[in-house]
Length: 471
Image (cartoon, rainbow, N blue to C red; front, side):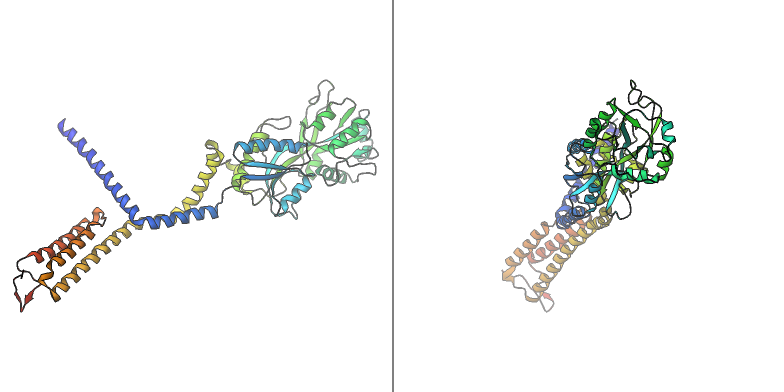
């Protein structure tokens, strides 16, 4: 038992001595190289700041008209960003076209926007990328009067011609709704007739309810106030587009949504049969210069806010990355394959972003700094050896002076100089690897001192014989 205790004790003492030795070496290393390490730290921080600047604390986002669906959706994004320490400021606009124009303007502070599908034309668009689609926006066609049967459509060549003589609102000129309606009529080989009016969604809903117009085409979400108002008005009917599959094939930005009979209103049985609705999607577009961390934050907001199950979309449908007519951001492509950086799942946004930036910059820089750091102990050893060799040279010069002009009356001065040299040697912080050189230096100094303290010494020799010391 005693031997086992001795072994444990020796092991513990050996480990403790090893730790003490390494700690002492580290302290000496830092003391000797602090200037180099400080320069390295300054260079690292500078490179970190320049190569990967921190994300902005405020982001501007274009939505749409005040009180509209995009503004309501934007307010949810504002709350999500606020929880993550970023201020998202909403910028009201006149619609999707203005949103695109402001994103394309490199001097405009707007760096994100909601845009309806159908407005995005890749040709001529520069500096804009997509973070995917975040919601369906069905195309609704409400009209007044008795319900028109499907057979009535078929009796009229071209289907849509049934309504061309009626007073229909087709969205404000320049809006996404107006652009989509224009493309739909163009597919049918028609143009919007002279009876068409171009009102804002709110104005069109009021005009239809008052009987000032006969119908309205809207592109909006099911939950919007305008759509709910029209669905709940018993004097209005909902028309469906004929040949939706063909239209969706020809207009790639459109989706087909299936609505079961009575799903909108079971009591009134709206729709009266299973229908396929055409729908575009809301796209989240950004300035391509947006910081990657803010892009991930937008995508996470879309997942939390728009990724829930809804009437038209199953859980996890959005953010979606299909039928995009504009280049997707590399961050969106990464998110589609792998999701957000894993740190964002466990740490607050600001801390996850900070750690991610540190890793992104530190790893490549350390690849260069590590070999340099490996040479630092050798550098320190060589530096201390140089100091020891310099003192050896000083001691040798001192001996040469004694040989050339020894004066016995100055012996005390000689000894004081040796004492000073030994004191300077004591100030050298020496690692254990070269302790032998250090003590050899001190032994050499002591040897010269002993020579001066002899009754006879080699520094006052004349004609090869030793001369006694004169006191």
